[in-house]
Image 1 (tube, rainbow, N blue to C red):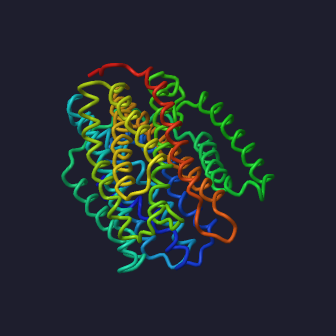
Image 2: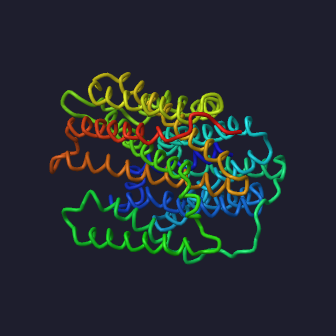
Image 3: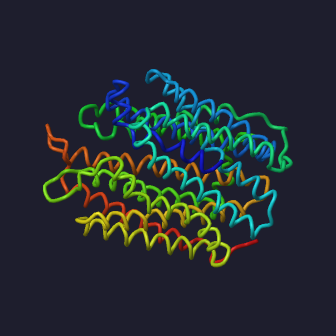
Length: 444
């Protein structure tokens, strides 16, 4: 299920230009399409975790993935942009599947084995995402854009049926006394939607500074209101008491920072493969780019179980520290040397491996550091941090290339890539200071 869901999640990103052409979309509409799934995912994840803790992970997981399958079907049949946006909104529910999977794993396995199993699930989700990115372009070009949604949707539906039939049920561990925190949910929705609009408009801030400024103020209002409401809520969407715990707060900050650096590289490397500059870039097509990114897909898939094993044996601090150093060195190397294809292939693979190690360590450490009834909510905080980190980093990478592209040209200056990799390295290296506060060992 994690593999098929990850594949369905990632098919839009590499095919935005194709979708813009076929659906007559503007670039702003393309940007909106690329972030709708992230918005829904960030909203649904804490709710999925809370409902999973309350009603049982398997029960909520099966229903959530049924919604995802409906969303994939809508996207596959979409004749225009509004219908495709609706499909993406429904597909965003898949992000909530990860904390639900962690609930099921923790309720059915002993602590030591659950860490490895959580790592395997995380790795399959990441690997599925890379499979989706690799296959979306060729499938859309050889068959149609409809099939690039339909194929992973069929896999999701099949996996959901298997999970419903074969996976043992896990008993609910929470109570159903408190109702849904609707004010907190509405404020969180407003905050995340406003944040994504700020990120989408940031590259064009010079042409509409008033709108961007108003959105920033609105974002601050939503954030303050949400924190105030959640502190008083009987059953908050995201319990501030969990965020107050040093281990969880540190894990969220680390995940955001690491994914911010990773997402800049994830955006810049394929762009540099496609670039046709004077003395830089390789002018690669979609099939070639997919082949070049394959080692990164393999590394990302392996990182999940390796991160779980490493966390069990050496502790979160050691795993995260190793991953941050590996990623920082790789980003610095890409900034300095990117004249051969293998430079980018190796650098991207090392970054994917390092990111997977770090995020898995954060997931496993958080999932096993809280009471069993809080597993879903706690891990959902990590996933929201991951989503936001990727959204911010991707927008920063796009803004750099936009600013470095002369009017009337479609070729960005080489300095933009150098600057992007260097900024990502600096941001990622800052995680080392935060990682020092993590526990050295693990508690089982």
